[in-house]
Amino acid sequence: PAELRIRQKSDQYITGEFNIVPQIQNGKMIGAMGIARIVAHPRQEEAGHKLDEKRYVKFLESSSDAILLYQDGKLVFANAPAAALLGAEAPQQLLNKSLLDIVHPDFHNLAKSRVVKLLKENVELPEAPEKLLQINGETVSALVSAFPVVYHHKPAIQYLLRPETVPAPEAPVPDMFESLFAGLFDHAPDALLVIDSTGKILEVNPAAAQLYGLDRDEMVGKRYLQRVPHPLRDSVAQNITLLTRGSIDSCESINTGPEGRQFPVKIWGRQISFFDEEAIMLTIRDISRAKKAQEEQERQSDTVSGLETRLNESEAKYHGLETQLKERETKYRDLETRLTETETKYRETRVGFEAARSELENTRTELEARQRQLSENETALQQAQHELKELKTQFGVVQARLQSSQINIKNLQTQAEATQTQYRQLETRYAEAEQQLNQTETEKTEWQEKYREAREELEETQLELTQAGNAVETAEDKAREARAHLTAKAAELQTLQHELETLKGELLQAQSEKEAFSIKYNEAIARLHRWQLETKDAQENLEKARTAEAALKE
Image 1 (cartoon, one colour):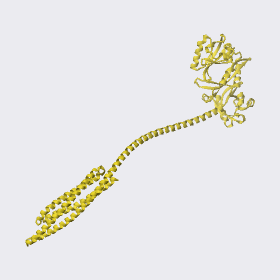
Image 2: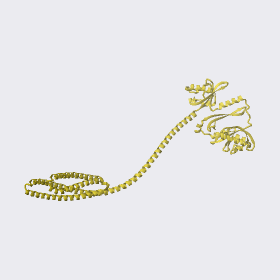
Image 3: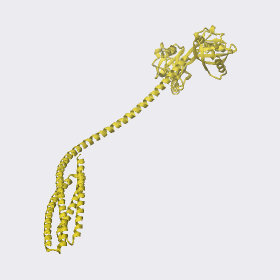
Image 4: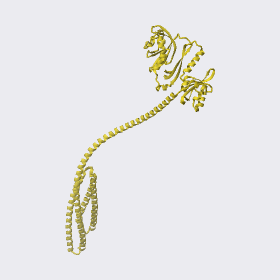
C-alpha cells in the first residue's frame, strides 16, 4: 500500500494507506478499486508522521491516469500518461508551464473559476469536460477533476485527466461486482474473516493469514474464538452479536498470534450473504502500534503535564524570588538612604560633639577655677562662722555679765536706799559694764565688717556662678537660696545690732525695764538659734550645690 496525506474540510490532515486494485474483464481493464485505511489520527499525524514525498511521487508516476500538480501558478509535476495526453515527449516538457498554457482559450474562464472555487472552498471539483492544448497546438478533449493536496509542505492542486474516448464497461453487472468484491477482499490491508453463526471461519484474506501467522487452510474450518484468550471469549462472542445487530460500531479485544503472542485488536463486524447463506464478516485490525502510540502520547502528555507543573512552580518561585529581590532592593535602597542620612547626621553630631566637648572642656576649666575660688570662699566662710561662734561665746560672756549686772543692779536697788556708797559702787560697776558693752560693741562692729567682707565675697562667687550658664543653673538657684538666707541673717544681725545699740539706753532704765530686757534677750537668743539652724541648712544647700556641680562636671 501507498501512504498519502489528505486534507479534510476542517483543514486537518490524515494519513492513510491506499491500495489500488485493477478490475479486469475479458482481458481488458475496466476500472480500478481504491481501498483506503486511516493509519494515523490527525493529532497523531501532527506528532510526527509526515508526508513521504518520494513515495507519493512514485505513486503518481506509476499511476495509469494522467496526473498534473499545479502549485504557485505553474505546473510542478506531470506523469507519463499526462505527457502522452498533451503530446509531450517527456513529462519535463510540461513543467513550469501555466495552467492556461494547456487549456483551450474557450475554457480559460471555466478553468480560472474552478481554481478560485477550489482554493476558496477547499473542496474536490468533480469531473468536467474541457478542451486541452497539446504541445503542437492541437486540441484534445478530456474529463478534468481536481482536489487540493499538499506537495513539498505547501498547498497544491492535483488534476486528474481522463480522455473522453475511454470505452464503457461491457461485462455483466453481477460478474463485475463479484470481481470487485474479490479484489477488495484479497487486497484489503485489514484482516477479513468470514464466519458463520457458530463462529466457524469460512474464509480469510491474506492479511488475516499474515496477522495470525497461519496459512489459509490452517484457519478455515476452525473457530475464531480459538484466536481469543479463554477469559475473553464470552465477552468477544457477545460483542460480535452486538456488532451484527448494529448496537455497537466496533469493539476492542486481545487476539493470539504466532507462538502464543497476544496483541490488541479492534473488531468491526457486519452480517453478509456468503454463497447464499448468512454469514458474518469480521474486520480485524492490529492496534498494537496505535496502543503504543497512545500510551506514548499519554506518557508524553503526563511528562508534559509534569513539566508544565514544574514550569508553573518554577515560574511561581521565580516571581516570588523576583518579588523578594525587588523588596530587598527597595529595603537596600532605603537602608542606603538611611545610612547616608545617618552618616550625615553622624558627621553633624560629631562636629557638634567636638564643639560641645571643647565647650565642656572650657566650662570644666572655668568650673574648676570657680570651684577653687568657691573652696576659698568656703574656707573664708568657715572662718567667718568660727569668728561668729567666738562672737557668740563672747556674747554669752556678755550675757552672763549682763545677768551678773542685773543681779548687781538688783542688789544695788535693794541697797540704794541703804547707802550712797553702795550706789556709787553700783555706778562704778555700771560704768565698767558700760565699758565692757562698748568693748563688745567694738567687737561686734569688727565681726560685722568681717561678715560684710565674707558676704561680698559670697556675692562675687554667686555672680561668677551665675555666669556659668545653664550647666550650673541648679547650683546657682541653691546658691541664691543660700544668699537669701545669709541676707536674712544679715538683716537679723542688723536687727540685733540695733537692739544692742538700744541696750545702752535700756541699761539706764535697767530697773524699770528689766523684764522687757529679759524678754527681748530671750527673743535674741531664739533668733540666734534659728540663725544657727538656717546657717546649717545653708551649708547643706551649699554642699548639695557642690555635689550637683560635681555631677554636672562628670
